[in-house]
Length: 68
Image 1 (cartoon, one colour):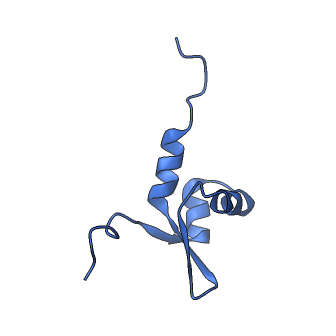
Image 2 (cartoon, rainbow, N blue to C red):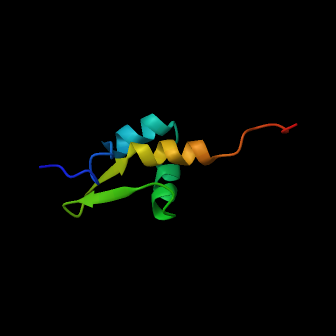
Image 3 (cartoon, rainbow, N blue to C red):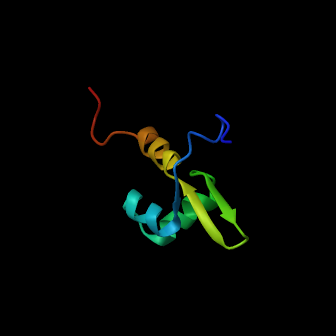
């Protein structure tokens, strides 16, 4: 049974998340290390990244250009 707290995550592998975010592997590693995106380690080796946390990060970025 899935509880509501876990129903909002969209988990992806590191490779899938890198492609989704359109960043390199090093940038993805930095985002995980800095806690800017949500990731879990499965079996001590495989990393799963929540794509919703990538969406939230991008939504919080400032717009480019002057605001008038």
